[in-house]
Image (cartoon, rainbow, N blue to C red; front, side, top):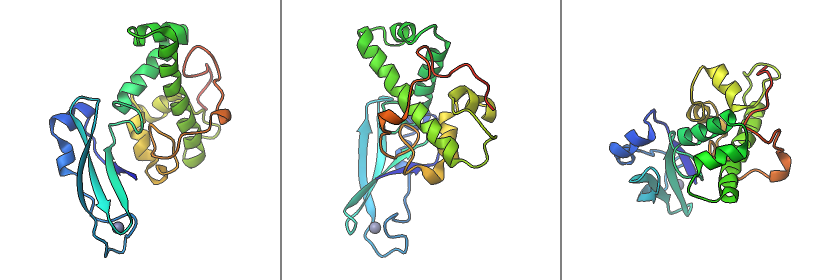
Length: 203
Ligand SMILES: [Zn+2]
């Protein structure tokens, strides 16, 4: 089970400080009343950024391992949330997804680069669409696009902040923001072929 490690550290800072060493899990999510044998259970490694490790705990009574993912890192995708947002911003600024794919993934063939980009687009769009259902304090008829969230929060990069905003819903929110299941493809349509956001007003 994936849990949140609340931190303002960037992915590079997390790695440089080996911050997984300071992660604590005082209460077992399965046994909040206590009484189980929850204990540290080492770490697992992620490829990106190089040297990344994630702290784990294990509850033998619940036969469950808990990994504490820092807010800077993407769930179920390599690297950081900001790296994903940079890619999606590049796609948004490109004349087409194909043009973005050539620039962003120049060492792989176009079809593979497009799949790589569209996977990120799809997951983030699905996450944002679910977020506007979950967050009660958004403006009425708010548009679930990255640029609208960036404008609303006044941030250049919003994905790490959205994990914070959605902390109560991470178990159902799709990756890379949340720790829930992959969304079903049929529910999300790409609204345009060229970028991340359709050209419309935010509210
Ligand atoms: Zn337990």
